[in-house]
Length: 413
Ligand SMILES: *Cc1c(COP(=O)(O)O)cnc(C)c1O
Image (cartoon, rainbow, N blue to C red; front, side):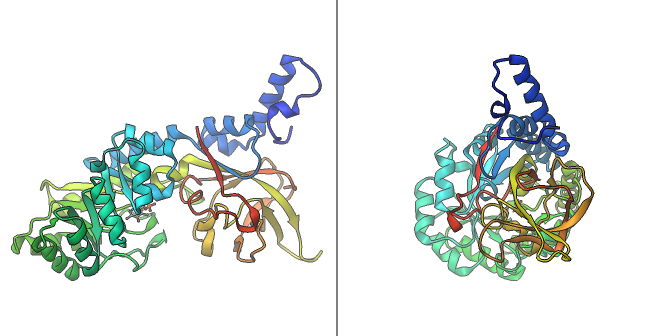
């Protein structure tokens, strides 16, 4: 079998025979790992036919659309606010906008980007609970009317710089079973949220609702139940004080596949929505979900290359496999080995655990060492590898030029 090369054309020998060229293209396609075709025939074709220099992410927009539709069906009745920090490629933003989606933005930079695609400010939520007042003012001037907060200090900024806007308070939620927990950085206690929403109303803001986030890559849909019980209690208490909340923002957290198997998001959404109905019956409430990872991770695959296979001593095991991608140019979420990607090669040798490391001169640039990654023993320098499920939190976490390495390149197809 031909090994993956820098595109089929370069592999054509000195001949103008069309058939040879077509044959070579077919062989090239065969040499992209089967698992890539299983995920997306479009991505497999792309990697088989494009000349790609350096690590590169490719995202299949049709898969993003399919995911969007699955989330919309699973979480029926909820508006989808795409958390654009996961992957702000304009092609993805355009696709989400065309599907009728909304956008969760964390900074003025993200808001400007979404507005530049012709999206109405009424479809944007400024969902970061930690905002500079100047950014709040600018967003408000641009027409954004939906803001989050989780503290008195932030509420005061909103009252001053976004008068009359709709605001929602983020409460602390249990993140136990999430692979990428968001800890206690965001949110406040239910008691404090109640006090702050009453205060918001008094300050002339529209006390619109409550939000929470159960932690990213949350594989357990029942994680929402506890938070929803808290929200129900909070709403009851506020109703007694004459403040009628009208919205619940269920946050993100919907899982991608990675190496632990596909989650059926249709079923997953149904479990969460059943928990909503259990607490709120058929009360009319606006519901929001904010998927990032769940919408785009599985739609992306990175093609990278083996730079070195080595041992520290002849008797040493396991091998070290160094790629041209690591923690600083796309795989930051391997921090603490939290996210474990599925990696595919074209080799069929016995899979033996290897330490997997990145190309930079920083010793933290090691992806899997505590839990080494099984890779074929016949894997060689120059081999292409495909890292699956990398559509989210890769390009945005890539450094500008650490060790002179360019930021992760990406395309949408
Ligand atoms: C990051 C973030 C999300 C998206 O989280 P995922 O786990 O990627 O779905 C949603 N909402 C807020 C407020 C966020 O900060």
